[in-house]
Length: 211
Length: 106
Image (cartoon, rainbow over all chains, first blue to last red; front, top):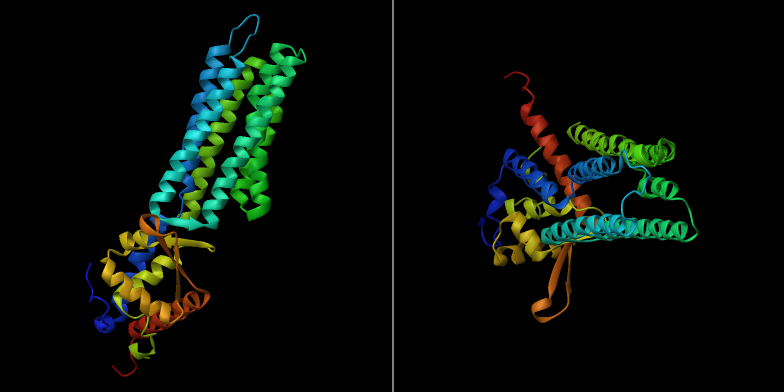
């Protein structure tokens, strides 16, 4: 686009032209500059649904219950979060945006990593203390859900984001209630309660953006 | 009402596009020069010229970080710039409304 190399020839622009430029530039900028939470939530929902669903398929019918390999499970979860962090950071860097929103995103992912790291450290301590494998299995299934739920609730407290409040509350409830399903079925509860919850919030955000 | 009531600093296609693009940033964020160039589709020379006019009016703030090949110029709307754009869109809306209303006696 060349509109006069710094001259003021745009003074011929009428009101309708100006309104059209505002609409076009605004839509374009928002699309590129504003992070789309809907896609992030959709991806997290699918990852959670498929991941926990596969875990349930792997552990159901185990007698005695020996669950997933704790180290492998922790590494897979942390790696998934790191890959998500890298892809989101790359997308933001390419848009050229810098500042508070980037800092907020980094602190959010850092909180997730620290929270999950802490949960897996506690799991290791439980194993070391001689906790039964089924009890550890319940913990490793629900602890990440509770951690993410609490982080969403903290985000609500900081930003008054009601969609995040609903999601956070639901995740904490799902973690608490799911734990009672036992070491095998807890994975099915997690897949069915957590994955679709992300998809629902994604749909709500889409509706809110259209309104 | 007439077009003369619109802020002449903003009322050019390129500067209006720059202002609207920067207004889409969240509070506390800024945008790289190249990012702004991609979004506005202006040549570097054009963009620099228009940014200079906006900066002189106090509507945008530019900041250069680093030096040499790692230098990065970032641009953000100032509080005055945000207010000026709000005023501009308010006047523009009134102009469009008055133009769409049927005139008495016509």
